[in-house]
Length: 190
Image 1: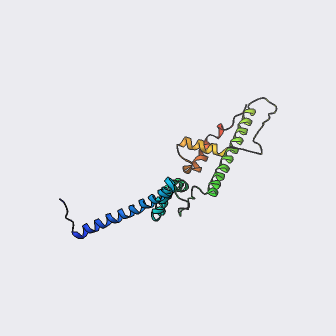
Image 2: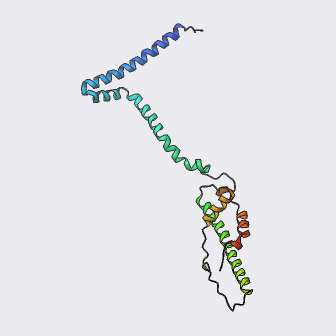
Image 3: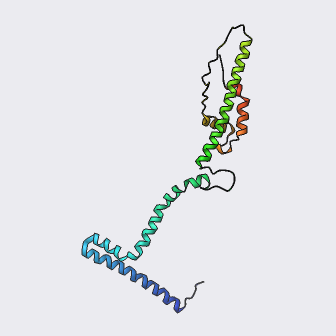
């Protein structure tokens, strides 16, 4: 079904077409004047001068399109970590360096304490084994005596791999219980 246009609508359509043609004609005439004055470079300059009112809008649109990837790169931390501010709960945000360092320090203290218990357990087993012999004396060379060094990140990574989870889901109580279960296997002696 074809719609009928009134005379006023037809006149408005014709006026819009004439106005567009007039603008195009002005731009083309500016390019022609530039071409006559300076060849192809003059034509380009004339075309730019003829469309100077729209050129700003065009350049702004191009700049927005070019800066859109930069915006996404700048937003990566908030996209990855779920925001740049605290969520209002007791849970610290995941990109708060002080909170992450405090959490890892707490884990390191716990792991070192359990490793120290493992050394004490190994020394007790050594003493027990020596008591069953006819020896006069024994010597324990403890390379960690006075300076227990451990790689906390390695323990945490192994825990996460064993539990098939990420670092945010680490349970300190479960980690401690798991390490204490195997502390008699942490250190060996000969």
